[in-house]
Image (cartoon, rainbow, N blue to C red; front, side):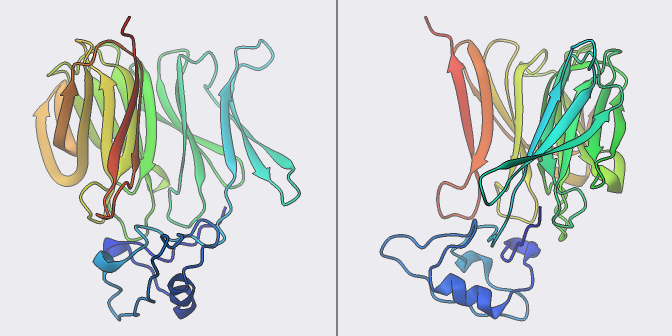
Length: 313
């Protein structure tokens, strides 16, 4: 999958072609590019030596032209003849046929107690890698990355068992290359601590940031979900962690990567992840919690969208 990112806000602007501005100025939409609002046209943006003014851009963060996307499908099976964690790639052809590609099975991926999957550009080359996380039969917490040659590399996140896994990806550290990191959310079984980690892919095989909490109803959290987005219009993505607290309340915690920040110890500890904000609502027992981000207005920042299924007889 090749991605062409022509426009990106903050310090992540890419070199721009005059033709791209001409197309944008005409209000045309190609691939996944933007469409002009009804009754509104945009003038071509000038090309500045230091990059265009992000505050006057009508496009948001990214303009993609002729972007082709594939589907990654991760799965696990308890069938006696197939007890490993596997994956497929699905590619839709111009004729409407789905082409199937088989990716390598993951070592230690049998008899799983938890499993997540996410796509991320781990090295900033425009090609997306497929990442799966899982808890193996022995309780070890793993993350696995599929390489372009369909081989797989696995890394041990922690030997202690975790549950309620959730995964997301984003440019958490704010590199100009826009390479993405994987965000790992879970609950540590032995302590009940709500846990968040940032994994830096092939550049650094371990976690570069960790956050744990058992205060304010965060111990023994359930229905954990996580997403990323740019909430404050800087050059990096932030993290939104949603879950049902130990008292049944709905909670959201927002964190950002800060390489100079270290706080606390034990089950209440932050290493390079700073808590920006939190929100709690006593809406009754939830059956499911999902969180994502969306750009809902013209302020060039993402908003947090939270959905839940409430059991209210």
